[in-house]
Length: 72
Image 1 (tube, helix red, strand yellow):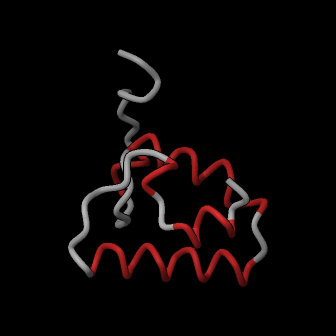
Image 2: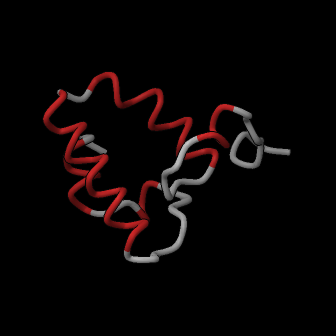
Image 3: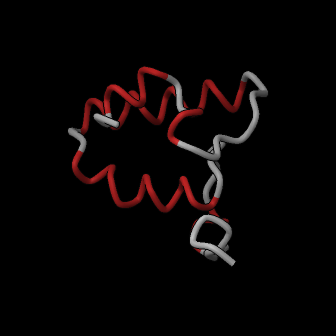
C-alpha cells in the first residue's frame, strides 16, 4: 500500500470532498495560509461538495482558486 492509498482514521472524520491523502495534505499546508484565505478555501470546498462534484484526489483536481490561495 502506497502513502496515497493509506487510510487514516482522523481523515475519515471530516466532511470535505477530499480523499484521505488530500485531507492529510491540507492538514499540513493550511496552517501556513492566512485566516481569510483559509475561510475562502473552506467555502470553495463546501460549494464543490454541494454541487455534487466528485471527491478531489489530487492537487490537479483542486479548483484553480484553491491552488492559487495555497500557492500550489
